[in-house]
Length: 337
Image (tube, rainbow, N blue to C red; front, side, top):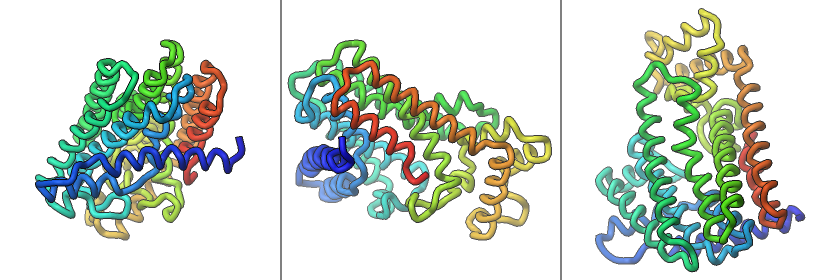
């Protein structure tokens, strides 16, 4: 498949989803609520999860048209999580625009997220010729696990004894679950055999892992203009990423003491809102990552999980859809690297 053909097909699938999202919110009152829901769904984005769902449906012999309502549903569910995450993180911007709680207020943002969740289920229930009870069960379990993952992420901010294993449990719920869910739902809608659906679930699981690890890595090594957000944000916010947790495990006494002290508080006389203090902290922590080979180790882990995701696809009959899934997954984990 040529690059031009691949890009055209991706654009077609995304347009199908965008058309559904454009009419997902029924005009009416209360005005602030409906406007906020439309505001969220019109923000754009790569529509990764919905595209994976549509391609997974095609990969087992179904059509994108069969799966487009479910594709819209998982995209709306993803946006529901972003609205509530932004409140918890006190984020002021999302995709270059003010977050909902900043543009309106926290109460309206909470309700916006709640309504988006309801709209997601409404869209899912429009999926034709499928096992709706099973789809809803999968979707609901995915929702629960994403919320559990966010709760773990918040819990890690207070805990000192977080391990790399804890980290993987968290990202497999918070980030990976929706990616694995998209692939599994697509296989179910397309009428895939149990082993095909299992292969797609495994593909999504490893792709979700690789995606989040790459995101953690890019926070440290990416070009800021390409990455689209400030570099070192996870360091400044003292997020317990795989890089930080691995550095804590491998560092010698002096460097480990620095990291442990940094995790509890910023050095005396510094303020993380001060640009110079932020830059110095990012430089110091990044230097420790390089010193102990943590960045190269994370790159290797991204590669291993990507290869496992691609290997899972080989259980499916080769087709244009499986080729696109493979190319899309490689594109996702190589982004801005």
